[in-house]
Amino acid sequence: MTCRRMFSNLLTITVVAGCLAGWAVESVEAQGRRRTVPRYSPPSGRPTVSPYLNLFRNNFNNPLPNYQTFVRPMQEQQRANQEFSRQFRRQSMQINRLQTDQQLLQRQTQAAPTGIGATFFNYSHFYPRR
Image (cartoon, rainbow, N blue to C red; front, side, top):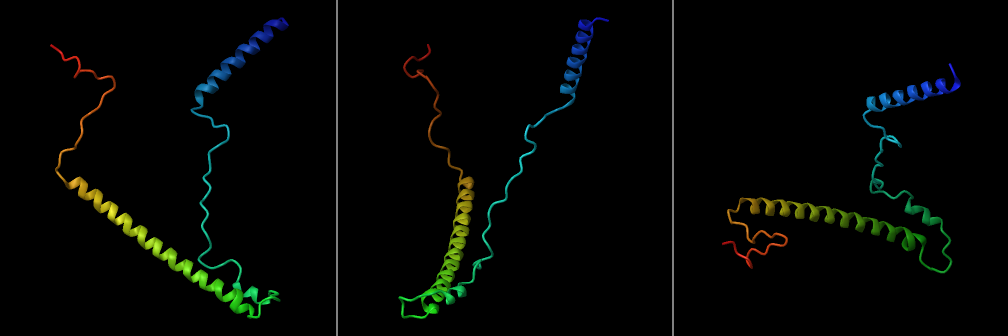
């Protein structure tokens, strides 16, 4: 066999094998399957760093002790934030309940829908059929 004929046969076999492999595989993804990244969830309501570490902070300009200056206001703010988040969750649940009630009431009414259907380039009211 000549070199040219061997190259031709090799090319034919490669093309046929490529076509068969393409038909055998249903789908190929270049980067693999996408993994979803879990959403960030904050720590369980506690601060990551204790506010009592501020007791050892240098506070030269303030006559009050570090507890009243740093620790206690931080704890009060954390309590207020927790209360606000509870109120927010409670209100959002109430809003969701009201929305579902409203949707149920809208479905139960027997009133006919208002409005008329619109069409594009509908000039039938200008040119009536005879």
